[in-house]
Image 1 (tube, rainbow, N blue to C red):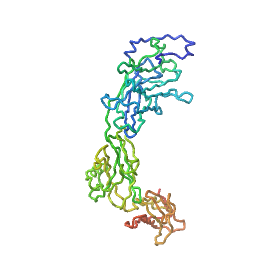
Image 2 (tube, rainbow, N blue to C red):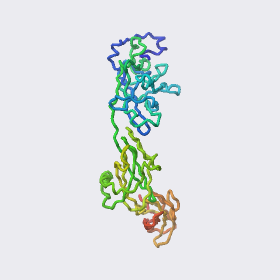
Image 3 (cartoon, rainbow, N blue to C red):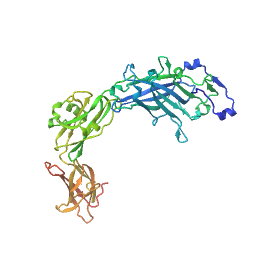
Image 4 (spheres, rainbow, N blue to C red):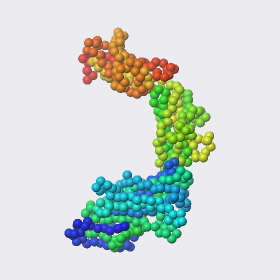
Length: 473
């Protein structure tokens, strides 16, 4: 690997450039680059260990990064005393989000080569090796600006057997320098070329014509301290989707020792509905309700129909957004309270840990808003109406004598004559002919419940004043 600062060949043919030679002793005290391992995360469910490699230029004697060889070891304990069984893992490199890659002729100028090295007879040789090879011509290498940290790649160590248990997955890693009598080669190469420097010096720099410089001399290695994930929920919410149906959504930020989730619900009286408080304050009070009242199971990871959607990640630094869980309700105008639990690995089947609690008040009056704009009008107006549940809807216009004039259409459902209308907000066009008399017209909405005979017919009336020649301006 070369650490040579050189000028493009075509320039060298026509120009004699003096150069300054840096001795090995000088380079030893100069940190040329920082290589850091960041964003370490463990996915226990998928048996993966992932981290990112970042590069940071720390010296003025180079600005083009060429290539590197990295050697790493992985541990199953935070004290770094027990290495993993390397035969159980494969390594994968994802450079799709790399900030170092450059493109030449439509293809990446850098290539990544990774391998798990395992030798049962010589365990001191076990490690993961990553080589990054740059372009043949240094001018196509990645240009680094001063003190700008760039992501090189994402590396994932993945178990190749389902027999690998949660305790066999790495939780931290380190660089491998030596073990017993073995010394491992770690190196990186960078170059300085006048023609691509923002402020080119009047010389070419070489490092005593050395073929390569061991990065132990010129590179700072950074390994983040190991952090144990904890159970962190991003959100838990329940949405009414209409026709006595609801859906539960939840997502985690981190997970630890999590076998899976359980969702239960209960019905409460109005005294537990704190409508004048914020949702956060209301949920905090609902979370104080005893577990004993949550007697309806909405979803349980231990049941076959929910296993693929609600099984936890065991332990993870990143968490995940889980598949929504549907629920079918019994009554309208009832305050339902939902609680999200998780169960620790190996825990007693009856022991669940509550994570979050929230409520859902099912609607009763299915037409909650109906307004006309403009009103008064010269004969045309737009009526905005809201239905809080799925209904069969009729909308009819009556004149001031009580005679039926017409049935209205809306922007989505068409003619509103016993039309099935899902919950939502809609707009209907009110219009009477030029021959119609001016005066007060009534637009009457009549909503019939879809599948609940316990709910009475819901109505809403909008009075529209028609004045010929009227202009709202």
